[in-house]
Image (cartoon, rainbow, N blue to C red; front, side, top):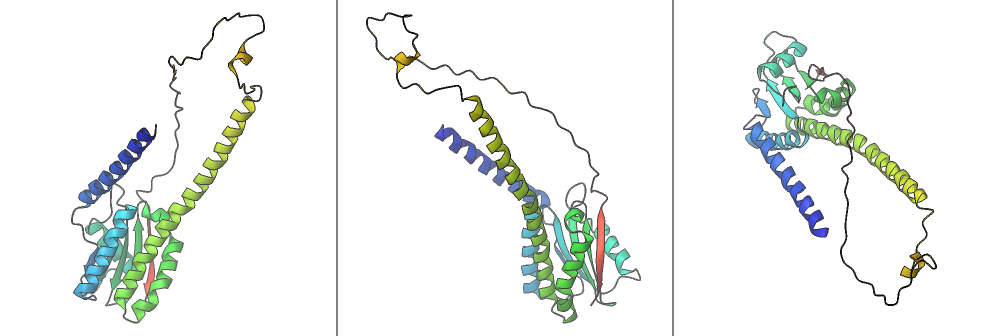
Length: 247
């Protein structure tokens, strides 16, 4: 039994590892930093790109920072949507992603969340992230602003996972205790016997010679029927949030 458990754990670890490698391979050489306004040094851009890549792959959502000289006559809201779509950003069919775009000509910044990311980086989350980076942008500390943006996005995903995982663990523990109590209650009529002769009805058997011999064990397993379930909900593929301000 122990060897079987170890084999199952090893198989799960191997499966997860292969899944991560496969996911990273599918992402290819995608970009995470578009510094068209040249606000970052080569080192700062490389450091930021590595951080955004790790966050993106860990959470399955592409997190991108972009800087531009101008919005080409478009409003900041229109341009961030244009940039996200024209660069074909986001992972999967619903193009899950988060974009921070900074425009230098009008000193505007916008944060866009798309697809499943819109469920995590909500309008209120965008406001909070904005509050954490706007002072850095105003001071011209763009590298720090972008690193703060990345950390904030990652923290929202970690909070979102914990918010759903902890209740699930609690519910699972409660259900497990209830099931154990029910099974224990069903065994109240059974009394433990310590010797074999206690199971023999008086006068029913006359044994002249006896010995305890272990011959074999038979285990019968019956497949448990799985109940089918279905759910309904709206797709987040068309969801998109945009927010930001001036700096």
